[in-house]
Length: 166
Ligand code: PNS
Image 1 (cartoon, rainbow, N blue to C red):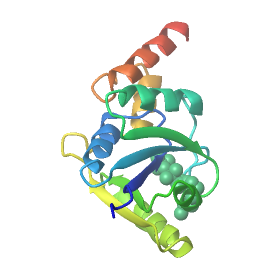
Image 2: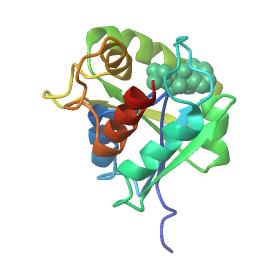
Image 3: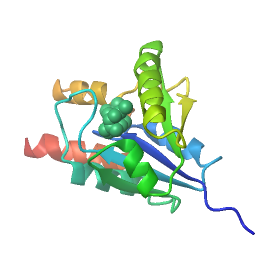
């Protein structure tokens, strides 16, 4: 009997997806057969959105157009309910800083209290990308700075387009 595919969910706001996210997702494929990049309609930390959810999904799909094991999806309710409905028992989150850890630990423990069969796995950010975050990308872009080194080509072209059209 063959084992069922190991499905992982990588949840977040992805507004927009960064090279840091991309690195964590590609590394997760060393232990997951499939990664669902799940864009949340509502984040625990409130944020001012740059891209609508539909464009965030498109950018994720474009970034992983070479990788059929990665799919993008959106979700509205609880992350653990979404994971369960998709047959995923793993939730992946990237860790960059100690500050991240406090928030992430609390979420992982709450998710475990809600659905103990779902495990959260933390992957340490690559040292070269530990300072990259969507919120800083949004801020730098909004203030006219260059974010080209922190995002993949599909995101770069959308940001350029946004700049052109205002
Ligand atoms: O990229 P973010 O904004 O840090 O991601 C946070 C996210 C979306 C993973 C978290 O807010 C979440 O899981 N939201 C879905 C609603 C939910 O399940 N809330 C309870 C978390 S313990």
